[in-house]
Image (cartoon, rainbow, N blue to C red; front, side, top):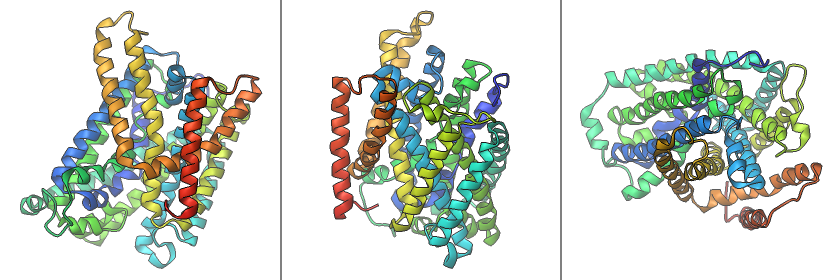
Amino acid sequence: MAGSQQKLTLFSLTAMVVGSMVGAGIFNLPSRFGTATGPFGAIIAWSIAGTGMYMLARVFQALAEKKPDIDSGVFAYAKAGFGNYMGFLSAFGYWLGSCLGNVFYWVLIGSTLGRFFPSIFGDGSSATAIIVSLIGIWAFHFMILRGVEQAAFINTIVTIAKIVPILVFILALILFFNFTQFSENFFGGADMPVKPLVAQVRDTMLITVFVFLGIEGASVYSRFAEKRSDVGSATILGFVGVTGLMVAVTLLPYAALPQSTVAAVQQPSMAGVLEAVVGHWGAVFISIGVLVSVLGAYLAWSLICAEVLFAAAKSEDMPRMFAAQNGNRVPANALWLTNIVVSLFVISTYWSRDAFNFMLDMTSVTALLPYLLVAGYGVLLARRGEGYETTPEQRGRDQIFAWIAVVYTLFMFAAAGLKYVLLVAVLFVPGTILYIWARREQKLILFTPAELIVFAVTLIGGLIGAYGLLTGIITP
């Protein structure tokens, strides 16, 4: 893969999608959904999320086919459709979301170890947990510097290894399925606070975005694909398989335990649920699966982080220094910046009230802007008919898919709430320094009039967010 002669097969690309998607989120679904809603609300939530993300997957598939010349997917589509600054914001947002996701992985490792060593690791944001995380981050950093090819091989092995605990969890809960318990929980457990169905569904939305992150895993690595058509196929195959797993993991605990018990389980909640059903070995088994899965997903996302910065620098959307590769063809400067930023965010979790859910939600929100711009580009392309010269009959269908994806991502922003949107703006404002640096290097005009308006809105949002943080109105 590192060399130009090595290409990824459909199986390897699908493993990339599954490996990117089945990370930490799936192990936290029972408690996060149990806190928010019963099975009825969960079914509605997955219907919305599944439809929206399926449409987004179809947009990625269409763009891979209609615009085969655009490599490394996500931000390149935003730039092609909406100009340089929006392309930069998409690249920076996607990279930042990937960094925050990597922070979340280390918090989850800490909270998993905290299940067995509560006084040492706590909820994953204790001083010891942070030190262990920092050692892990830099151990991975130096391993990846030795070569991407070796890391991609490990990712395929880990993808297989982490599916096993999830399948065992699903099979065990099917065996212990209690229909009476499921029906008592169906519209919300009797011992849970009463809240409207709309609020129940809204409270699950950010976790559904988080668990679907990675759907573009094949698109990011499109330049390594044996066949361009495999990129779209891998995206759909990975999506369908992973969605089935996530829906099962969410709904089956309602048939084993009261909703209030599911809601109260410590994260990773899949371990606690299986422990309640089969005994202590269940928690140990899932916890080992979590650690393998999370370390594997961390590896995949470290690669994606560096690849996004590298590709953005190659296309002159980021400073040239991030396009540098070492002797193993690894984008070394991009990897250094990524892991410095991840380390700083990990240290910041020490002051967070609920580092676990805060990092999860921040990761979800930062991914929404790149997804929105990809969906928007899908609309533009279908309306103009670009790439549809030989398949004009697909235009109408693809435009509908892209519009649904646009509406879905806008709905997700609304569900996230103003707090997270402002916090993302706080991060985007200093990030714009990289854009200005890159434009200065090329001696190009900084902003067009339209881009200046976008920057002004971002700046105002960032200042409001910063004021909220300083005064305590907004708490992480």
